[in-house]
Amino acid sequence: MKYSVVFPGQGAQEVGMGKDLWSSYASAREVFERADAALNFPLSRIIFEGPEDELKKTEFAQPAILTMSMAVFRSIEIDEGISFNPAYVAGHSLGEYTALVASGTLSLEDGVRLVHLRGKLMQEAVPLGKGSMAAIIGLEKDKVTAICEAVVSLGVCQAANFNAPGQIVISGETEAVDRAVLLCREAGAKRALPLKVSAPFHCTLMRSVADRLRISFPDFSWNTPSWPLVANVSARIESDVSSIQDALFQQTFMPVLWFDSIEYMMAQGVGRFLEIGPGSVLAGLIKRINPQAVCFSVNSSNSISGAIDFLKGGQ
Image (cartoon, rainbow, N blue to C red):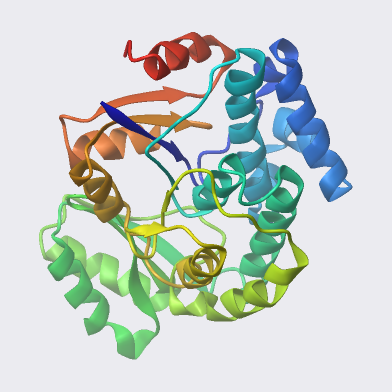
């Protein structure tokens, strides 16, 4: 059965992630060292030692997650000698950039530099406290969208992530998002709670970030991906460099269509998903989207043998 490789987004970071890989796999050590050299500061020290408040900062969290995810990927590919041949690659928000590094569209160095820039621009775009995000659990897409539209007089409020059935994240200006949270609760949401994020991602408040990112794209080297990318913004394959860049531009201020992306891949015959990187959030979302999906999350040296079994068809 076909499989896809998927990569997590911001929020999956954890102090100490990947330290066991650094100790166990030469290729993982090389990934961390190359990331430090590319950024010209000790990112790996922040990843391994924290403090947590520093690692949470968007400008550090984004390259940290990409680096840790690629350390897992290279440990399997190089040290374990297991070839990847996924039907598709995809990633949630930031994870889309990791998918592009894994598929050879961007080098590791260009990938970490680009997401470090992305994180800095996102943090600078909206002053702390002015923007927020909230998770809405147990309301349908149309209802959440209607509530967002009902609070626009208070400011920007939009659906930012369509993660799974009944699991949507909204984003925008704090007053509008807070009001939308109350209305979602009144409308019968099982849960509607603000998220601990430093900026309102995937809404029009990020449009200036997208414009500045697009200007920076020519500063990096781009290649056609080895495997088809299913993009967040379209939930369809984007395979040439210009369409990938356009998808990354739009993704910055448009919603992540994760639910649609998984459904698209499964409609093409994918039944198995390997999540590579910190945490296991994506595997949980995929199982909510389709309980028939077979998922495995590899996020440590202890889980690499299971990932190898998965890739050999044993999971």
